[in-house]
Length: 332
Image 1 (cartoon, rainbow, N blue to C red):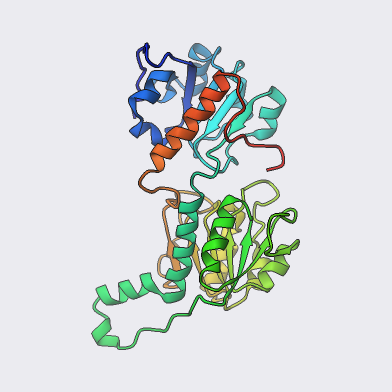
Image 2: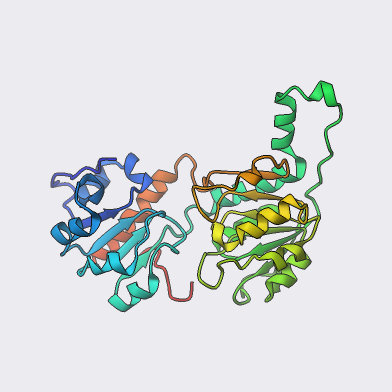
């Protein structure tokens, strides 16, 4: 994708130079107001390797915008000695070496909660899909099996189910609100109890899984949460339990998840994310109790405008010495 280098505008004077790392989707639909405010450096347009491009063109660049899939390592940061701000277009920030950023005095901003409602919608949609066998029923009818095999297997009702939410942040709260409307009972696991919440708090993830009919993963991926949902947690969820993941694939030990699904040690799964994206385990393709989505929970009409606004707002705040709109804090 060609990222334009805008000409100066008297209406919108340029605020500063930014380097684009990865290919953020919102830039494909950027408006003239955005392009007039910043001067872009785009390594993807150059034939030079990234490190050589940064050494030649970006030594004085103070701000970077990166896509959720671009890994900003200590080595990348080493080639940006003047960098003071990274804005990622994703809610998650596991792709950024936060520790190195802190050492170098680099602030980090993410997409905040702009995707929360859309991600929560998909999470609930996946729960209903798996429980009521919507996708499986669709395949059954379209393959012509309906008149041949007769009755389709019964689904399960959602009302009254015990929901365990892993990570009661902005997405987790939105999921909980939606499921309360179905008459579900909400519990959650987090690093610490949320003072604003009346939901039942569990400080142990195994305990939460053991009392839940459905486990919804909404937490950030960190070294502490990587493979937090392991075999023991999945077995605690049990043969009647469902799991839905709209966070990051590596929060779940994917090999153990596949094994539990194939052996029917849990009842089903809805997965928008995978541990080794874009690779998806082929063992999942033939399972009617599994619904898959291509990491698209946040992608809806209007999302690019919202992303544009949050990225622009953070960059404007930085270049104007104002507080960032959505800073990533040390305790997140």
